Length: 447
Ligand SMILES: *[C@@H]1O[C@H](CO)[C@@H](O)[C@H](O)[C@H]1NC(C)=O
Ligand SMILES: *[C@@H]1O[C@H](CO)[C@@H](O)[C@H](O)[C@H]1NC(C)=O
Ligand SMILES: *[C@@H]1O[C@H](CO)[C@@H](O)[C@H](O)[C@H]1NC(C)=O
Ligand SMILES: *[C@@H]1O[C@H](CO)[C@@H](O)[C@H](O)[C@H]1NC(C)=O
Ligand SMILES: *[C@@H]1O[C@H](CO)[C@@H](O)[C@H](O)[C@H]1NC(C)=O
Ligand SMILES: *[C@@H]1O[C@H](CO)[C@@H](O)[C@H](O)[C@H]1NC(C)=O
Image 1 (spheres, helix red, strand yellow):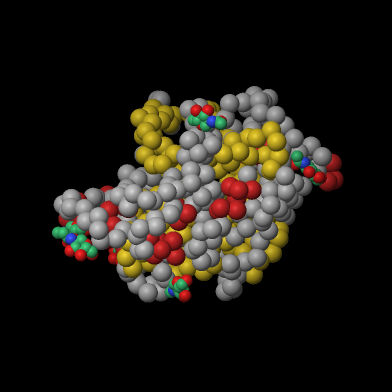
Image 2 (cartoon, protein in one colour):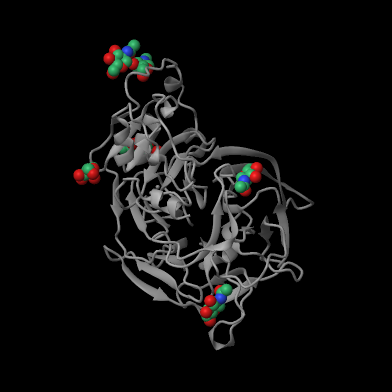
């Protein structure tokens, strides 16, 4: 474990991190002009500086899929992409130092725009997981969950009306213990949370089973939506999204146990679920992933994406102290050959009034190039932004998972959220850090 974690920070990249109105169909057309060069020049060096000078930007030739044969990489999932060693190509250092790495130069430069910036270390945070970043545009506030220490029941609130933002801790009424996924619903003004904590000995006699809850960001009044499946406990709802019909989809994963914030053993298979607010019914949607984690829909609602972070699993032996990686003992182990994939499904509607979604055509579309994929969000143009989980960065791909660019941070990234009046600011939150990126990839409009 400690070996694992110490190698994580050998990585380089500095410290802070990513929205335009382009029709979905156009933005995703393959650029045929670039596809015509099938000539590899393996002596030219894999990387070069490119793009604007407001950040360190590196372009990688031909996805770096041929490296001088002396290269090596520790398969440990906590060794980032930048931990790859390429002794015979000095240009590789440009990848290791980069804030932004571009694989598709044309579309990558569009994503970055004319003056991309990265701000690292803006906010001092604990060495624990930060998750569930939710932007409430009316308040211009970003709410973020802090997973740990056990017993902690507050949320961070960043007031973005100030630069740097003012940070405070807030508590909903009743408190929601350890949320790990969140989404703002512009239709009703509530913040919906996937709440993983299970604790029957909270202060003031409060008991909580894991489930879904929502709160009004103006009054902080909270209410529970679900906390069981016909009497069975959920393991720990992890992430959450809302479909075009208003149904709430969520993943259930046992990281709550891993993080020491659940008193309950699993009672159900880990799965992807759907909750219908109008009736209260919860239905299973998929049981095929090891650790269903991040979840989102394409802008047209016709594709569902879910990440599988199955290479991180429960370890009966606590990671003692967890060294400088984590402030509290956690129960987690990694298996580099385990799943680190993003899956897609087609979403269709059936039933008399076409209000019963079914998902078909499951396909694996992406394998993380570091860590295991955690939170995933979909830009307004359909591009995927995939958090590296254990690893310090996010990958940006088109809707077909062609790698366009990546953002490199100095802390593991668990989840991401766009903010700003034009949704072109991206916050990357994770273990021990927050990073803010200003660029040209627009987040989904929330109206
Ligand atoms: C094709 O790629 C090679 C090697 O990277 C480069 O030297 C050459 O200029 C490219 N040709 C075209 C037409 O882009
Ligand atoms: C390949 O790249 C090297 C180094 O940049 C250059 O000297 C050489 O001319 C290139 N060869 C071709 C065929 O483009
Ligand atoms: C790029 O990286 C170098 C070396 O780390 C640093 O000195 C420089 O400030 C960076 N440039 C930008 C624009 O961030
Ligand atoms: C910013 O993104 C928009 C939409 O993709 C694009 O039309 C525009 O050219 C981009 N700006 C830059 C400077 O690349
Ligand atoms: C439950 O909450 C108490 C605080 O009241 C805390 O001390 C304890 O560690 C928590 N246990 C779990 C498993 O979350
Ligand atoms: C690691 O994962 C692979 C694939 O899921 C599995 O075959 C293997 O047994 C696992 N190894 C350990 C040590 O758990």
